[in-house]
Length: 171
Image 1 (tube, rainbow, N blue to C red):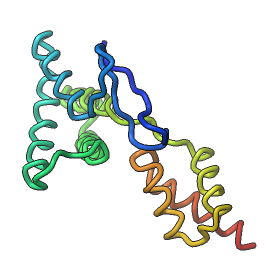
Image 2 (cartoon, rainbow, N blue to C red):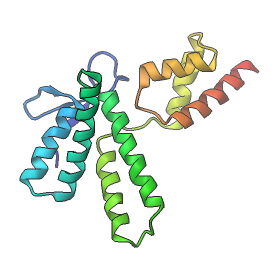
Image 3 (cartoon, rainbow, N blue to C red):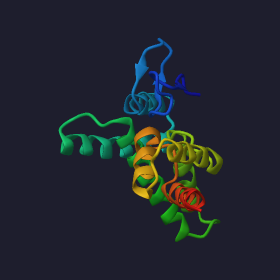
């Protein structure tokens, strides 16, 4: 029951998403997480509060390490790392164990902060468009994907799609 809605920002809808709050002002993903943590504390949602506190601790550490505010892309990368850690832990537990369910809820919560991922068809369309623009090597295509769609696709799937499209182009 968040008061934030995802929307694209600027003239390039492929760039990372920002969020609009109830006052119609832009916020970063980091600011949205801070606001959600405050709401979780107020509403006494212990699991959400604990997960977001840990996540913000990691984000604050990264901010201090770099000396500048994190971009939404960096925040998304950190969230993905947390989701992967939860999935790894779940793989070591039996699904009927209470701890497994706690990690599952954590992963669900964290995924709610991630942008929607591009489908294989969307990736194919983007890769074919890049090839049409003259980007004909794997490195060039992947570089363009990263530039225009950072954080919006699965890297392994993108690599496989790019390879398939480039092979078809070369034939």
